[in-house]
Image 1: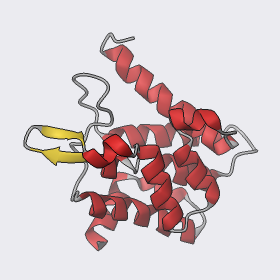
Image 2: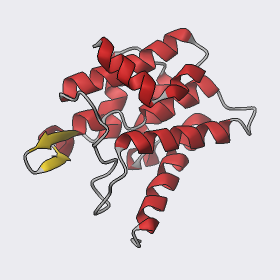
Image 3: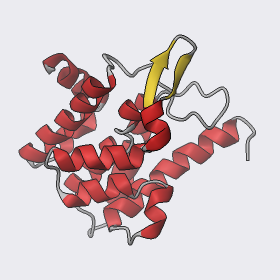
Length: 176
């Protein structure tokens, strides 16, 4: 598992900006555990969405962009907990390591993912591994599942940064 942790640290160097050493450690551990459970040794070729045809941007690239955007927004406000924000942004799509599977036809949403979407599985894993409820909440609330709850400020930032990146990807391909 140490190789997975090193992989996560290199892909998401913003994790080092989390000042709480325990939260920093657990953020890495959640990604590593999700990859282990999903059978992944790398996620560099995993698309960040199955919704946009011809998507070549990877889940890693998407997560990096969302995290950088979230940090930029967080730094403009004095009412955002940056540790919670960074951990939440890095982990917002961690459930995709459980939702997707590699098949002979390529990477697809698997049976588990058809039944339990990534915001739910990612939040459940983060909760199981002892992350603060604020991070668990932001993971769960970053997609349409979050329409039914009051979002914390950090969850609002992650939600909007995620959709900004998604909408830009769609617009680059001429999709509505």
